[in-house]
Length: 133
Image (tube, rainbow, N blue to C red):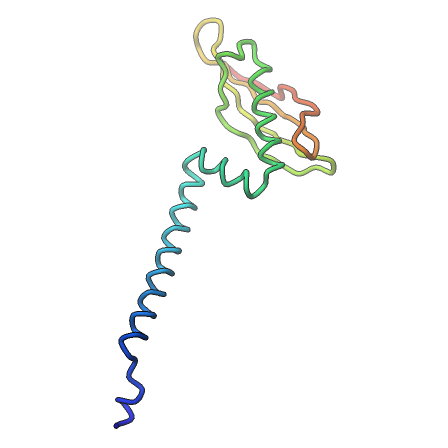
C-alpha cells in the first residue's frame, strides 16, 4: 500500500463532506432570503420583530392604532410610514409616524404623529407633531 492510497478519502467521507456543504449552502441562502424579505415584506418584518423584540412591537402597534384615531376620518386612515422607535428610560418613543387619510375634497391629507408608550407598550401620550397636505 502506498502513501497516497492510505490517505485517500473514502466515498463515505466524501458524501459526509458533500452533505455538510449542502446544508451550509442551504442555510446561507435561507438567511439571505429572510434578510431580504424582512426589508421588503412588512408582514415578515412584523412577525420576526414579535419574536425578537415583543415589547417594541407592541409599542409600535399601539402607536399606529392611536395615530390613525387622531385624524378627522379614522375609518379612511392608513399608516404611510411606520416611524422610528427609540427606547426611553420608562418605555418607548415612536416618532415620525406618517398617516394619510381622506380629506374633505377627496384628496389625501397627511400628518405626522409622535407617540410615547410605557415599557409594556401601553399608550402614555400621542400627538400630531406636524402636518402637510
